[in-house]
Image 1 (tube, rainbow, N blue to C red):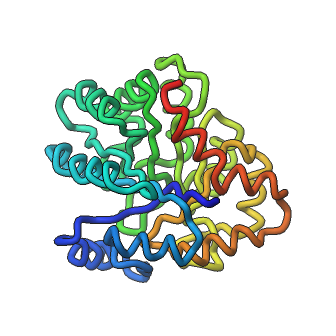
Image 2: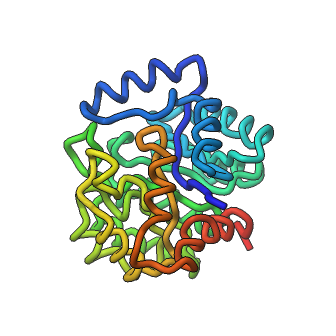
Image 3: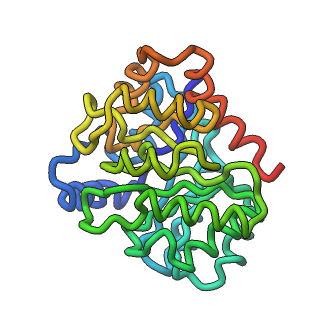
Length: 280
């Protein structure tokens, strides 16, 4: 079994336009699906992926209802897709909105500090993270550089301070925050210093320089993170459509230096735990 914990799709009527806009904002970035639900499922079938977690991004206040209606529709219709919710840090009544997501069966939310131009240690994000911890919603956040932006809004040092504060204020002892992209794109030394060994999950999307251009980490870096942070806190992820699921699955499975038991944890067992034991 393989669970991809980090994918993106868009409604069919805006998918092509959205993909072209995002490509234009980050020259050199490749696209491997059409950004639609059907194209993701085709990619999953080709790649041997059993389930994909879809991560919507609210880029401005007021998108909450539209984004999460689309996400809930996916969750009600497809067994192989699990969409998280999305919320903007400046949305009004975040507690009410997050409780609504929880009551509607959502397993977690995605945040993207760069797309909201808001640092991860902003009080609005800290409040959202504390609330998610208290009610049992997993949070996936972009971490490190985003090729479309000049400012890094979630660098590892800020992420670690937020993590410690949120863990203290929420009272949650199990990890529930996922820092994407091996803890931070183009931030491997800082991520190693500030995040490895901490109480969080790390996903491996955008982590193999042999498979993509926007990446400075290689197989040895990925293996070192797994061994240092612990395979029980690492999640398989691709960031589709920006990376190729087929290449990622086969490349990861062929890695030397980690055991088959560690690969199983990363490929699906850790994700199963997050997705099936939410709130327990």
